[in-house]
Length: 473
Image 1 (cartoon, rainbow, N blue to C red):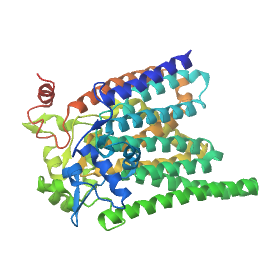
Image 2 (image 1 turned 45 degrees about the vertical axis):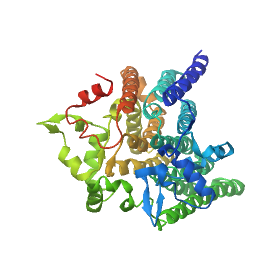
Image 3 (image 1 turned 90 degrees about the vertical axis):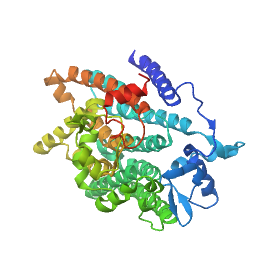
Image 4 (image 1 turned 45 degrees about the horizontal axis):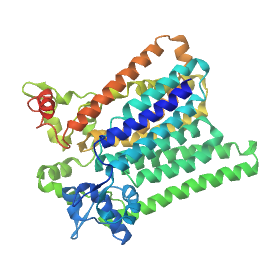
């Protein structure tokens, strides 16, 4: 019965994602002239001619001026997706941003469904309620809903999340089935390269997790060499070699792109050349003083992503206004908290972390624990970078989701022993899913109303008044 209902719900959810991205009355493809949404069109056109700059009339102030040419800092993968449009008349002016966002949202959902089905294979019949809650939470909250506001910025994040969720799926297989790990490393490498060519922070996290897990897998291979056949050993090492080759290839391509853009293979963006600096001269000073990433910003990052007190007033000014103004370029609306939109996943992640320490004390499941910890450490990198970043934007929440979803899916496989003894867990999870769905939909609605960029001056007279004006009251 649930299988039939789930098929119906999957179709319904897909229509909801497409509807949210396209807003029903918007065409997925438009003809535009000199618009930011055409930046990837220009990037693809120039790549076909062996150039790495973009048309200044498309990227506008988001460009970086170097040696008389304007460059964009985004990865090239969204540009590669534009290659088919050049087969159409006037294809250079076809804006497919909305269509691309819709496709990415659907792919991300389908990948997460595969993750649910995979971890559910470790459930017993008593845990059918957990699979249902995972399905509802994945389909209607968090990573799947909060970003369905189409723009070039969101497109990059959505495709990075596609690769991030692909990485998570294969990381689950690598951790929960030791014999699957070498094969999983190859697919994780593909996901890592895709992420690196889309959004560098996501790619660095995937590369870090892949590298650490790869060391663990190689150690397992050599420690078990006496217990497996030479043929099996050779196959495992060949798969690990393919994964390494893919990772190296991704690094070489990325280094080449960086060199062509900035003259340095290790530079991903040179903000000294950012055209927006003309309108915000204080940003260059702040960058020189505190850098693009600084550990002093971690408390502000925790406030922004988890405890959004920064939108509240105290004594005629906003909470932490002086600290935000001094250390960061922008704190973007809407206010949101992972505790609200993703409380269910955070709870499952907490269960997994508790299980790790419990297993360590009992000396159990050490192979799963070591592999999972390697992935967690790597996926923590992009989240940490966003906590330290000079600009805190709503879409940067995307960097947290691979870590959140991986720990949540792992936690779902070990919650059984707790839920049997602790009867409060099941209703508590139901409440968390309900809160997550409502909060995610509200966040999406507010995000659609909000302006991109710095928000402190916009809400100086009150957050409620700002949004009431936005809706016409």
